[in-house]
Image 1 (cartoon, one colour):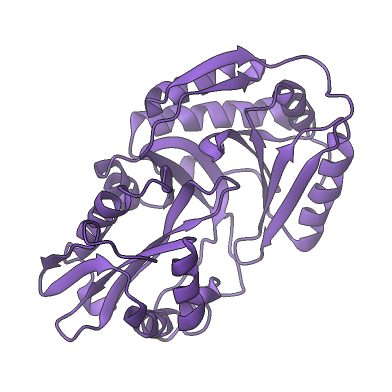
Image 2 (cartoon, helix red, strand yellow):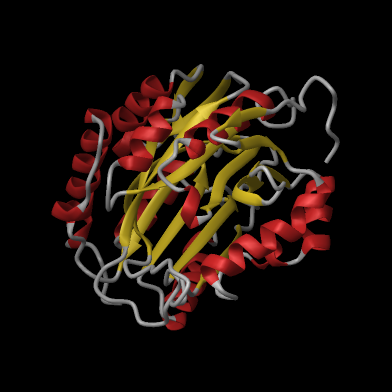
Length: 353
């Protein structure tokens, strides 16, 4: 990753310097993660200095760190690509050394990251997943201009323990997973036309208005595309017991392809399956009808996920504990009410798992 003079700046707070990643930080980052997680953190790049440096040089990672007076890395977070469109970056993997917690460094680090990295033309949307087990992350994200767009059920393992003595991700999973609120911040406004499935048209219009996105809406077409094959793949996350299915092209064989990927997910032990589809497809309406007939229900909007906006649908093995979901804003609470209503509506359609 290049550090141009105009985007490489520093902030000092409580004896710590907040700064963009430098190659010399890589070993310190590995040490920080080992001191908290041992060898159990699932994203292994943080343990491998050369791999982390290479990811930064390739532009798939943009870390930000806080260093103490001895130039040791005491806090880390990064923006990294997780969407098909390379202009979308997730903010995550945040970690702070125990003795530096609750000192206000984290909020300064995140604000500095967005202010500096937001000048990069290749970074157009950033988002994060805020836990719904408490409100702190949601409030922090809102203060930085992130806005609610989707709610993923059972997205986070409930029994994550962070201490020197315990593995961060234990094998035993107790109860349902924790929901996460997906919050996006637009760095580069992009006008686009999206197709609205009729069953979610009013909901998606509302979310777009919350996000203040410049969108033109068209009603999705009836019928299936002819001569197109479905392009879809899946990712399995064993620690959180969830499967992500990404449908990049909707074809007339969607029913078969989706069935294969869904069965694979349940057979691997998934507790939840999330499906992402492009709202740039004229046939999104028929695809939504198909998924709802299989028990999938609303998750929300994913801005610029395919460059065109994406739609999140989800399906859970166990009955959701909607009352346990903690939300900070009225918009997030409204989104939850839509999701619960759609879950109830699709329950009668859902085949046995």
